Amino acid sequence: MSESSYSLLGLWPIINRWKKLVLAAVVLAAILSTAVALMLPNIYRSTAVFFPTNPESTDPDRLVDGGKLELGGRSEDLDRIITIGQSQPVAEQLIREFDLFKHYKAGAPGDDAAENAVLNEFSSNLKIVHNERDAIELTFEDRDKQLAARLANRLVQVIDSMNQQLTLENRRNVLGLYKQRFDFLRNEFEQSRQRLVQARRRYGIYGLEQQGRYMAREIITLESKLHQAEGSGNTAQAAGARRALQALTGPGGSNTINLERYVQGTDSMGLFVARLNDLQERLVKARGEYETADLTLQGKISSLYIVQKAYPATRKSKPVRWLIVAGSMLITLAVAVVLVTLLELYERSRRSAPPRPTEATTGTAGS
Image (tube, rainbow, N blue to C red; front, side, top):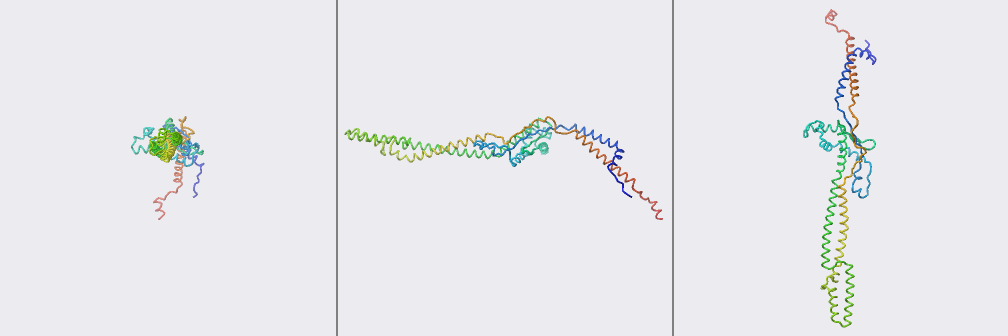
């Protein structure tokens, strides 16, 4: 016996015979899907677009030294920003700030099930992608369009802050080194200045070049007076000039400014003055570097170039209710057609099958 052939055109008589049942199923699916679609809340989407940068290009130290801000990031910068945005610490911070436990109606904080539910809901509503223009699109969806926009913008700020924190600790360590060097040079400068003051008091030297000219002039003057007094026979004037010359030039001279002490202290004073000048230059430079590092550490330069902030959506992004209803009707129609077709095939198979022999017929044939 040849097998019965079936075609798609043969489905129409089957559907026509079962049209009431099929139509009832489609209408019921339309009613139920419409009710479900109307019960679904409107979801709004807010998107922020920004470019990440290389942290080296936004380092305040480089900017102070004349560096320029560079637009555009490398692939590793893009990956770093996306990783930060999708990290759990960022999600937990925003969940606490916006009280999403209450918003998502997940339960009280501290419960593992509630925390997992909120994290999963937050992650499902967040989307961070690298688009074809080397920018990052951060999208957040929520029933509250104002909340979606505020949360997306806040997430961009948190990403920027954490991206800066990656180098902040090292910069603080560098600032500590600047501070140590500045304190060291300041202490050395103060000690050297005290030694110089003590040396000046000891040797009576307050200006090397000026005192040298002064003593040379005074020695010449006193010697001239001494020679004149000795030549004129003025013993008293000669003795006075001799004592004055001895006080100015002798090792035991009582003058504050004395040639013997001046000669002894010249080398030491030159060394002290050179040391003090060197420390002063280094101290001024170290103080400038420390103040610059401290100022740049306090200043915050964004590591992101924000092209578009997230704004509250003017229309919902989902659900597409007509698509839900139409899809449900089509699926129901397809399932109904398959079911009635299988039922028809089953009935045809039963009708076309030969009758099974009974016991009486079998016994007669055997006799």
